[in-house]
Image (cartoon, rainbow, N blue to C red; front, side, top):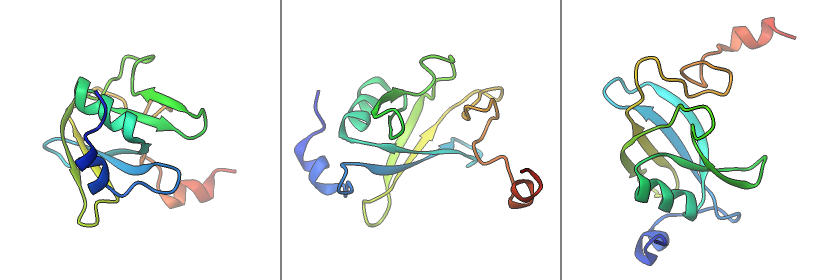
Length: 118
C-alpha cells in the first residue's frame, strides 16, 4: 500500500526523497538511533508496525532488526513543526539493541570518548 498522496505532500522529503527519522524509546524518551526514511520505508513502517529505513550506504530498504532479531516495534510516528523530521517512538525490550555495535543506543559515545580513541 503506497503512502497516501496527502501524507506524502504534507511531509518535506529532501531532494533525494529522504526524511530524517529520530528513534526514541517509549516511556523513557531515550534516543536510540538516527536514520533516514524514504516514502517506501515510511509506508512499510506504518503497514507492518516495525521500523523500516533507507540505507544510504547500501542504497536499499532496511527492515531494522530483520537480520539481528532486534526489531523495533513502532508505537507512534510524529512529524516536527516543519514536517521535515520524523520522531519514531518504539517499544524495544530493556535488553534490546539499536546500534550495529551491539549497544542499546547509537549515542553511547561522548565527545571525550571520540578524542581518546584514534
